[in-house]
Image (cartoon, rainbow, N blue to C red; front, top):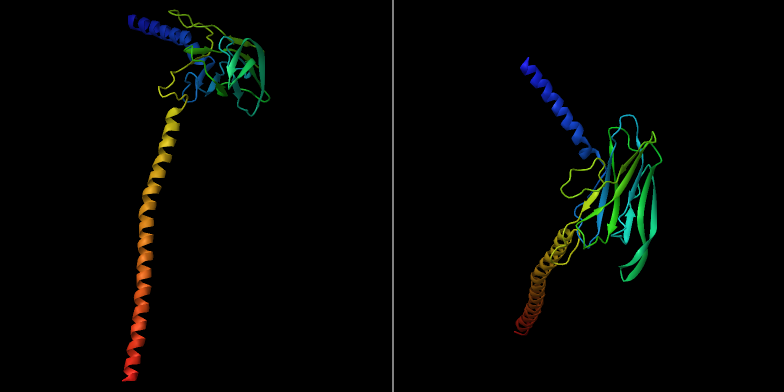
Length: 246
């Protein structure tokens, strides 16, 4: 009896843990494709899982931070979704590519033109963003998820230091430090490509030098051969004449 009670209590406790922790695995989140370095550009994905068994996600609204406006925001076209980009006037203009911007993207709205994100599935919504701010370690994107049954879930609660994760946390993009050499974003790939180009040029130069030398040698030998041939012919003619005179 005691063992049965302990087993039942353990099962209840395990179920409670799963229920309490499930929001951490099912909320709308944001992650970069690769790295999101301060001062650089990145492609970020808003991951939207469907938490319902009887409804599809048909709309996603993502609000962009107004305290750190981004000069470039470009969503990727997605089949089955209509994308609307909303811009708002900035309280303070920002510098971008040598000019001042007075407005920036404040919200992107994806509306399903088909079935949306059906139960048991998730979908990623890619957006190219930059230049990422250098004076913060993270960006908070508040999101609103709407289902086909008109239910609305607001992922807008910000995490406070030392506190437990809120029930409906807002997506947070963690920014990595810019590389020491001044490159931003995928600098490793750029450096690898540059190194490969340099190696190819060196190999080409090293290959060209012996080829040029061999070509010059061949030409010299060819000329020498022609001269020897002419001399031989002349010698033969003279020798023939001497025999005739004799």
